[in-house]
Length: 143
Ligand code: THU
Image 1: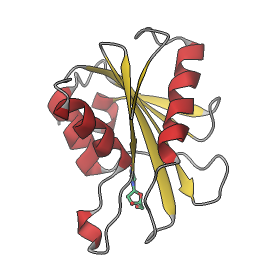
Image 2: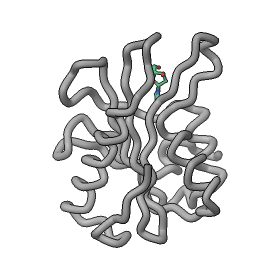
Image 3: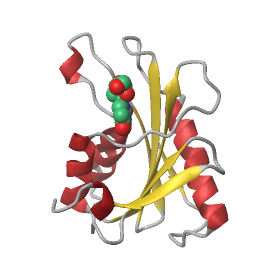
Image 4: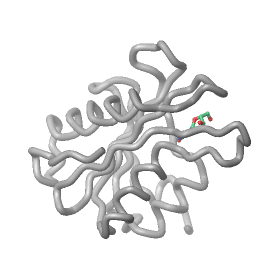
């Protein structure tokens, strides 16, 4: 799913909260019968579109796709390759807010393929108001 971001790409406090809220919307679509851990992502493109992603698991575990990569692959499959930020939320099924969920190494590498590591921002959130912001360079040094 994708959404127009009403804040453009300017990421002030309200815009960050909205991006995180959209990540929770992505999380609702999580297909995670094996781990029971639901993850959602909201990827803000430079054109102001937000791509939502969720984790999609598989009985052959290694075929699982993380929420972050679901969002990236949807965007790139539509020809969009310039990005500003991503918000990530996750937690056990049934939990309301969740816990700070940092992207896995494979997802960091996918981000590195398309994003400027010094300016692309990653918001790891446990609620719309509680999050930690990192640059991609902080999460994947010397990528
Ligand atoms: N997962 C994500 O979707 N993103 C992350 O950043 C961490 C892990 C998923 C993969 C698997 O479906 C579940 O969370 C448990 O690891």
